[in-house]
Amino acid sequence: LSGYGHPASHLNAFLSNPDDQLTVWSTLADYGAAYLFSLYLWEKYGGNDTIHRLVAEQQNGAAGLDAVLAAKGSSDRFADVFARWTVANYLDDSSLANGFYGYTSLGLVDSGADNVTSFNRPVLTSSASSSVRSWAARYVKSSTGSGDLNLTFNGDDAGSFNVTVVKSSTASFSAGSNTVQTMTLNATQDGLVTVAGFGSAYPAVLLVAANRSATVNPAAYTSNAAVTAAPSPTPSPTP
Image 1 (spheres, helix red, strand yellow):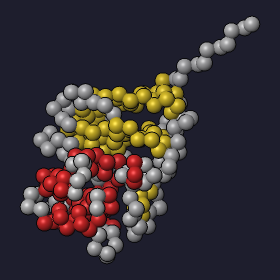
Image 2 (image 1 turned 180 degrees about the vertical axis):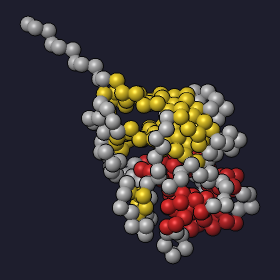
Image 3 (image 1 turned 135 degrees about the vertical axis):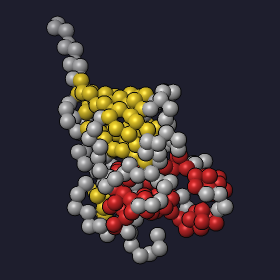
Image 4 (image 1 turned 45 degrees about the vertical axis):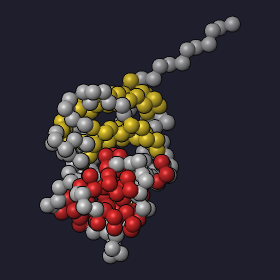
């Protein structure tokens, strides 16, 4: 943001541990998260003017950002920005949603990052049962099997999750190959999304579990990916 390049050690500390609370600053990962969030704000919500207003705003934290966004005429609030940011941190696909799911100032890749203009994507979570800290996210990838993929999510009943499902027509979530869907959760933070064509039309699917609760910290959840065979087509009647 200051023209001196991206702080590689900070970013890598965060991306290797994406379950890092955005609203707390004490470790290298914390500063990496704060930098990446500030970069996202700068790119998507008005550049230098927004950053200057945020620094000058008397309210701190989420309330301060909400005030700045409102003053600029945006209907988005901190929770909205956070939810999209968690998806952009893995997907980095600026072809979607007017660029809100990607970056223009840096690239996020599966491997081979140069740690100057490109950085490795966040580490994936392999366990079905886990927890996520306040204002942080975990990422679960499904890429094995063929048929209908049934993604279920069961979060802490007292929590507040944002769960996003990304289905990709490429195995590496290449830009331009992705479809983003928000999973609808009920009052007890349970939801289901079925991806038809998994393994054929969509070889890779990503689930992003983000914790939007400031009080349930960490918030436990269970996610499950079950593949069922697609129904066989009904044979045509013999004349």
